[in-house]
Image (tube, rainbow, N blue to C red; front, side, top):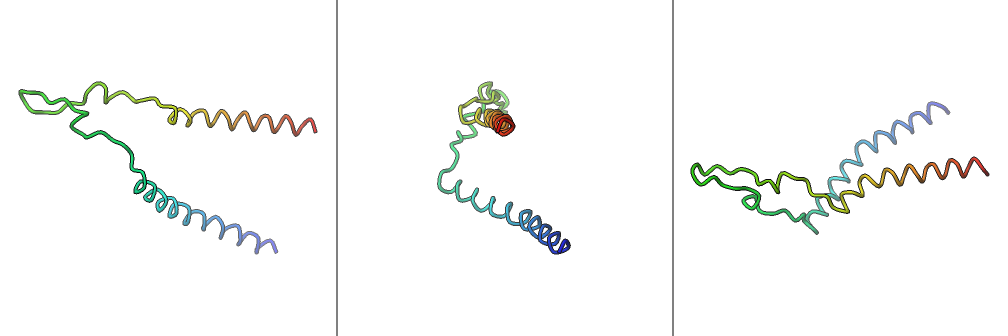
Length: 94
């Protein structure tokens, strides 16, 4: 019985390791096809030196832009930790 359970566990782990990246890549490509990211043209992010013709990045293109969607990445961890603590404390009082 124990060998059967262990075998089933290994099969599930292998399936997750193979199927998740595969399905993730499929869905990611479909999302990009439906709503592609908005990226400015490369030349808009560069300043050309008139003498040499060499393009240097603008100062504005070197700075990371902070958006609400980007900040959710950091808030999400805090929300999960708070929710976990509420569940732990709440279940201890029951």
